[in-house]
Amino acid sequence: MLTLAFIFLCSTLFWLISLIVLSGIWRGFLPIKSGAWWAYVILILTSVALQEGTRLVFWMLYKKMEEMLDAFADRISKPRLRLTDKMLISLAGGLGHGVAHAVFFCLSLLTPAFGRATFYTERCSKLPFFLTSALIALGFLVIHTFSMIIAFNAYDEGKKSDQVFVPVIHLAAAAMTLVNLAPGGCLIGTPLLLVMAALTLQHCWRVACRRLTEHRHQQHNSS
Image (cartoon, rainbow, N blue to C red; front, side, top):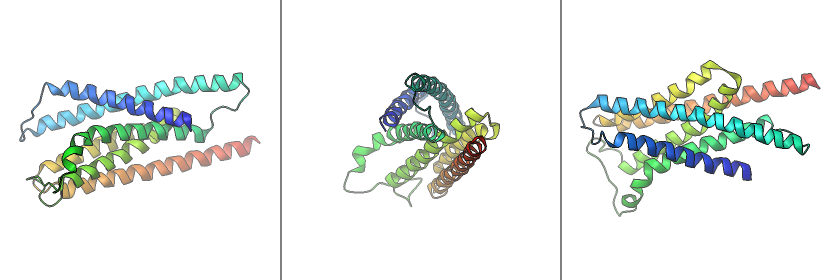
């Protein structure tokens, strides 16, 4: 449990730093004109590309740590990390990514959110602004958390389809937020984002079940 908590905290800090770096890069291009859709597209593309590149770096760092833990286990005659241990570590890392994204996204909204009244925007007059923000944060929390399990497994197995799935679902979810710029778009974009989150969760479940089943068969055949 202490190891998972350490992984979670390190992941949260790691992703917060990457998001701060990204926001610093885009600081010089703000404010973006409301009608300049191309600027938002470039922002989303660069954001997704940086985060997916950072995910790969995070996995490489994790593999170094895994080698150290296995070497330490060998020295003290303890078992190495099991498949379930590795999945829990990737889950903790993904949760750190999701929490960092949610904190970065919602931190500036905390103070006005505790006021006496709700708030609506001109482009989304049917859905409260804070509810929309909370649903978007929840969607990305789920996507980032379970995408990490899919990505780590894909990197380990060299499975190209899942290596492509993670950035594609991330990009698709980010693109759904552009729908919110259209009048009444939040009624379409926000549910679509939650659909992306559900697809990620469902695919992660399939990957985890397949990997665990294969692992049990391998253990049974070797015994």
